[in-house]
Image (tube, rainbow, N blue to C red):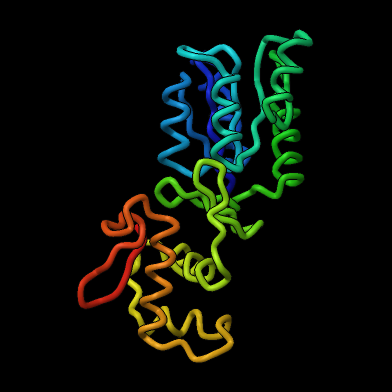
Length: 222
């Protein structure tokens, strides 16, 4: 199920569009302003953002710029501003589509599905702290900057993502990276890989908040 963040300050539009899109199989979250939108992007993982230009605070152009800078997420502008300036500005900031109000809900759904298909973003972005992992492109980024993980580091990252919330023993981790290493990976080597990965994805590797150590058991990513 694709997760969509709706950024809109008109309550009637939010209520009607949320109900309709949920009926079409989308998972919808809604916020009304610029600050709330950026906070939502920091907390959650979304496959698309539906974004109004005029917001309760700030504006959609600033939100789009921030999203495109920090996250690999497509944006569709929903706005009553059908003038050429707004359209050009939206696309220049990286918007993937632009639909003027009033719009037909089924046309919007068609546009959403088309953009998700073209961008390959349906369910591909995973957020760990302030790190965004794109499992389709095989990249990990912070603030739009590639962290350049090695093959083994990225494999470890995927193992944690696929077992989010579970405690993984060192034996389980060793087994998971054995085939990609092409050689024997011992317990000491695993320690080195965990250390290197933390150095790239943690703000403070000495006090990790993403890959946590569970004493006597292993490691866990919440």
